[in-house]
Image 1 (cartoon, one colour):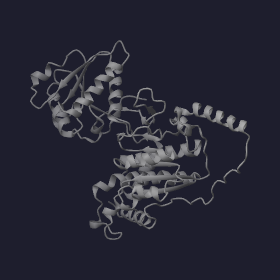
Image 2 (tube, rainbow, N blue to C red):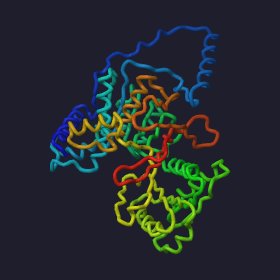
Image 3 (cartoon, rainbow, N blue to C red):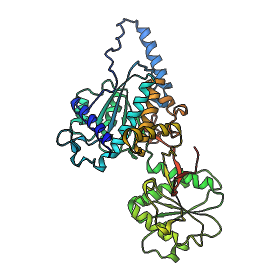
Image 4 (cartoon, one colour):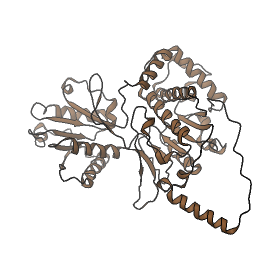
Length: 440
C-alpha cells in the first residue's frame, strides 16, 4: 500500500475516533422544521381528514403509506456503514503495524473510498448533506448503542456494506423509523421479512438461477440443458429452485432440464451419456467453491473435442481464475448483478483519481461504493426521502441498470417483505476482459 493511502486511512481513523466513529463530511444544518400550530377542528372535518388519509394509504406505492409522502429537505442526513476494522488495525495509536494493511480490511476500505469520492463529487455540484460514517466492526459503533443514543433519529438514508448480524440490526431500525436501507453487498435477506424499506442490491442465488434459466431457454433455439450438482443438501436445494423455474415458465418451446448428480467417481463414459453432438450442451454447475467447480470443469474439458459444451457457473465464479491448460479453450460463463467494463466517463474518473492519489487501481468494491452512493443520493435530492415510487430511474444510472422489484414471501401479502435487485448479467470469462452476453 502506498504511503499516501496509509496517510489517508490514518486521517480517517483519527476523525472517526475523535467523533465516536461518526464524522460529518459536510457542514451540519442547525435548523429544524417548525411544528405547525395546533388547531381545533370540527368532528366532520376530522372525519373528512380520516377519509382522505385512507384514500392516500390505498393509493400509496406498494401499499406502504410512507411511500406516498413527499418529504424534501435542504440538507439530507446519510449514514454510511462499512467494515473498516479500525479497532484491529490501529491497536497502538495511529501507527499501522508493519506499515501494511491486513487483507480483510481492504474490501470495506475500498467501498468507503468509492463512496467518499462520490460524496465529494456531489458536494462540488452543490448537494448539501450531513454524512455520518460508521465502522461496522468497531466496538464503539455497536448498532444497539447508536440507536439508544438516537443516532438514527434524523437519518434519511442508510447505505450499508455489511453482512449478518449487522444487516438484521439495521433492518430493524430502518423498519421502525421508516428509513430506506440500501444493503450494498450482502447477497442474502438474512431471514428478514415485512420490511419494505430494505433494498437488497447484491441479488440472491435464487434470483441468479431464475435469470440464468430464462436466458438459456430464450437465447438458444436448440439446446441440451444439463444441471450438475453434488448430492449435498445445499446444492440439491439450488437444483430444486432451478427446476421450479422450469415448471413456472410459460413457454411452449422450453427445453427440459436433465439433472446430473455429480461425484468425483463419475467416469468419462458415464458423463458422455448425458451429452449430445448435434446441439449446444449447456451445463449449469451449482458448485460455489473453486475446488469443486474446477473438478467438474476438468471432467467436462475431456468431452469438448467431441461435444459442443458451454458451462454456466455461479456468481462466486467472478473472482475465480481458470488458467489451467485443460480449461483454456472452454466457454465458461457466470452470473452477476454487477458489470463494469470500465470504459465509461465515471469509471475513467474513478480510475484516474485512484492512480493520482493512491498510486493504485480501484477495486470492484470502490466502484460499488461510488455507484450506490451516487445513485441514491441523487434519488434523495431529486425525489425526496421516499423515492420508492420510482426507485428504478435510468436517468441516474452509473454502471448498472438497477432493477429493484418487490418480493412477497407470503401468498396474498399486500406489501413487500423487501425489494431486491433483479438485474442479472450473464458474463463470459475471458483472459483479458470478461464480456457481458445479455443486455438488460
